[in-house]
Image (tube, rainbow, N blue to C red):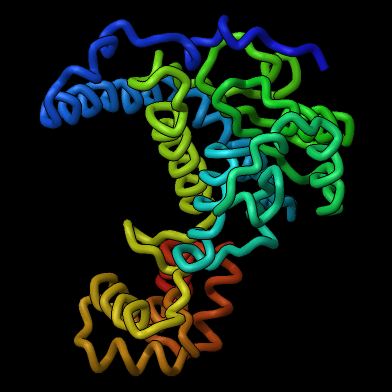
Length: 305
């Protein structure tokens, strides 16, 4: 692939506002970084329409039985792993739906694998190892927008007819010629030149949070603002599950615990049982009829009654 001149990337340029950062006091350095970080939030907000379009692509894929693959290297790859890993305890969604692929494999999460990002064929190989289909989507994450490992995966995904989304912090990158949609929060030069784990990393994390969270809401993983597909796999999450049921229905702790036990730990079913005054089997049927949405299930119960 054609190599991009790094000197032309805004993420690689020097920040004129931090040229004397090595002469500042600790408090002054902290204040400068905080000011710069605010630019990352604004840059993400500027991409709201593209993020909305990306969510629609993701939701359409999920509803067709597709999967979402995050793929990146270094900080970008680690951010993908972090977001994907959090979806199981938060929304009950595991690697069978959201899967993160990082250049250099799992060890690259903890140990630098800088050369791996230049391995264009490996991006293709690692994607193909997941047996992708045309119903799946690849989200390529690269602050520069030109990482060979990521570009390789995106090009193969396009060849296979998969949906492709790029996430970068630069304009007019190789991703633009490949991906169906490119989200580009341009955060400007880093406080420390080229250290894209800073503003660029913050912006990428914000975007991934938005894409995955909004997608989960749109497929019924949230009722009101409660994470009702959370898995109560430890004591803390068990207590949280009980609080969610109490908040959603207004019942006391004992009633919530009883409903959770009768539903075999299914928060959604517990809420529907209590709101619709029905048993577990009926609640599950209402959820099926309501496409997994708690609010739809409750409304269906009211209509039936």
